[in-house]
Length: 181
Image (cartoon, rainbow, N blue to C red; front, side, top):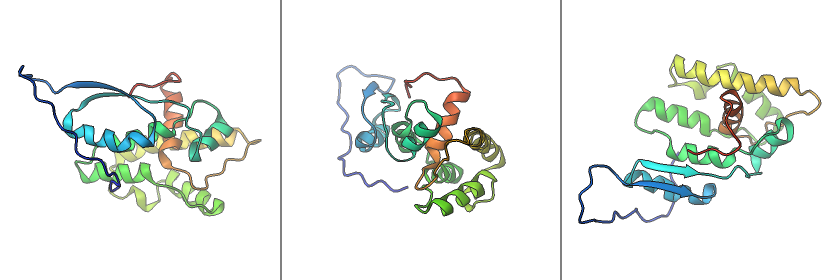
């Protein structure tokens, strides 16, 4: 996932008092518009708390909210992917999997979704069995929730994997409507 940001690198401020710890920051921001800065902040300090809204109503998120309810997770998805580990080939494989967007064609998207949930999709290549089974458990739970709401047909068209994953994860770990990342 190459960065398309055109931000200048974060410049560190020099203080006359030496510090043994990198600076701590709390960032209140919107979703994707701040992602370039969030990615650059990783070069400055790893001690950043991101406070994000749960009001995103576009794309995959709007479909999740329509069928399953709950707070919107699209901005959280976007930030998590930007901040995710990229230091190993497995970390990159997981990032690629969770950043994947399903096809626009509804039928193709649904078939690809099933292939991913069943663990047969090529996106699983490079993801170890423990990670694969953990991620699949959340995806299977999400699929189960969709099937239980048969009155509202879920459209996977152009869906992102992370909102589908994060939406059910937040219910399983009983998080509140606002997250601090």
